[in-house]
Image 1 (cartoon, rainbow, N blue to C red):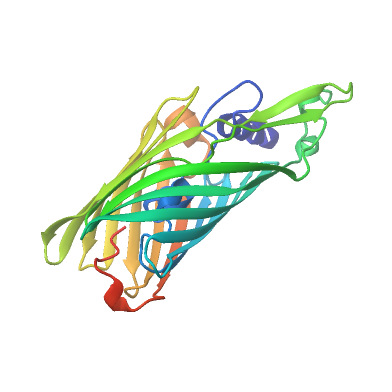
Image 2: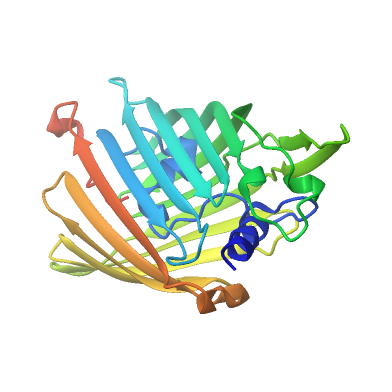
Length: 312
């Protein structure tokens, strides 16, 4: 049963063999993990921003995804250039994917309170699998005879990001190249394990002031890739006394959940979310997904240079 669950996770998440589906990790705190999705976000917070996120998906489901990301980005002193670094590790059953990307953004000041940025990212994905460790009903299945050891493939990404004090929107393709991963079986024949698909992302968010102590923050992340239905994350959060965030989310065809966040200081934010999967009957086999996020803004320039709050 444990092996069956691991294989089920691989099929649903990686899109092995001839199946093409969503392959990139999902994040309930996507609004706090924007650099992973869009390189044009680099430098947009007028600070050296470091964000750490961990997602434990489908708790108690053997072999379920565990994703860790670490991002850091900042503007340069001329305020037109933003640089970033994105690190990600995604472990799914016997498969492990690590990525390292450098992000570059060029920011144009459209008006006193609005900016448009174009971003590029370049880096590599490092894939490892340990398929031969699985206990199979058919031990001679050629798809599981050999492993992938530290297979490194380069990749590049592109994004556009528009921002104002109380609104943002962006389009991106963070992984432009479509790499394939194959292994040689005992008959010296090549077996396709995985083929990456290009993903397209649309992000948007706004902040509406209700009173001096209450604001409403809707955000969305829309994902599209060949061979899979378009998926949208829709989140609505209330910000209370400019410190406490309480929100709810729905991921179409997949999950519903809640978020909580707190600004310990003007620079230090912590957050937690829980979501429960209802799609593909996966909710029958797990106890939901947990996500934790920490973000800190190091002010590297004079605070007088910051013309707007860092709402996003």
